[in-house]
Image (cartoon, rainbow, N blue to C red; front, side, top):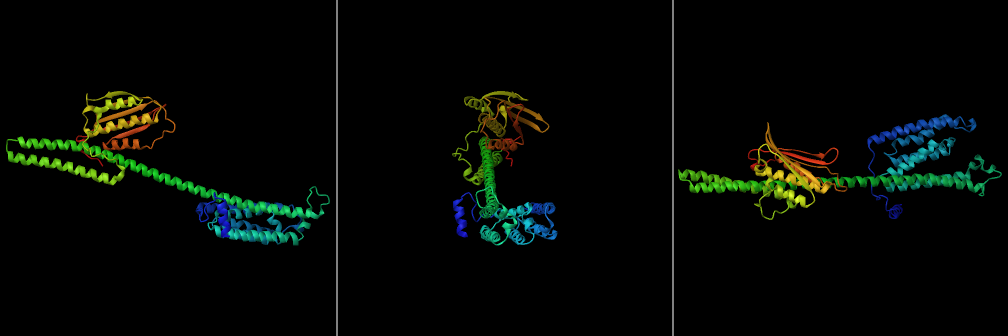
Length: 455
């Protein structure tokens, strides 16, 4: 039997592996099986009463025998998916025993036939031990074949069906051959159909499990990519903040050193104080670089190499005209509008806030180029003061539609939100009515923001 199973799987590669076990149904599914079996039994009893009303009394089975046969064949279906092989054996035994008794007509009823069909089908599609299934199913099929052959050739079944009383049959095949052949084909369709449909259902269940596994793997990989992108963006922000902080603290150190050298009044005390300022500034630079080194190590190979140029000047809002020119060269015309509560306020922002606002504008305009049909966008820059203090805002809008097959990873939008959160800001990103897209980010301008690391 093992060789036969291996042969079937070699010839039918679409079937699941022989060692695959279908997951057991949940408790809700088992409860549905119980209610379905009880409903089928009730329907079968009604059908049996109708058939008894159409049968002569001398040929009809007793009420008790009919109920016993139907119960023996249908009630095992209550547990057909929990113990499929055992329930198939019980149904087969009930079918064969009742077929040799006075209640054999009950097995001919459509509900009894359906119950046995479901038993065979469930065994093939839900059995977890496939080798045991094929071994026991082979025994059942062999027993059924022997029983049918013996019944055909040793009983008066043909006479009871009045087959021999056909004086002038319409077909060309003799009646004594046609009836056994007809019975054989009906049983072949019955048993073969239940096994075939069971294999199809079993294969579909395996395919569904593969799809679920692959979907889960894709979801896990997507989450890993998203986490990786967030880490890269945070590390990039940390590196940029480091450059800004290092620049200003280094300037403080240089100024303190110069003051120490030129101080005339109380030179010893002044020298001591200035030296302390100088040491503190240099210590801050060293600690900031150490912190950045830890962040880079935690990112591993996910963080691009900066090439050792940690003091390269970072862009700011003063470089905004260059950014607009670059977008124009790539086919996106940008209309700029400024509404400042104080003239020149956007150009005098702290370095950290200015850098974050510049990066947000660049990423939002890049999204328009990549994912929208629009060839023109509007960049609105605003500033103001409310009860929480000064703020700056960038709003990028367009009137295009989404390009087909241009869905991105969403990492750019994550970067915008990360930068806004870094400066206690808020972000609004979404479609416009009736069409177009809007990206709006408002950042808080806090005193000393350029030297403050926000977790």
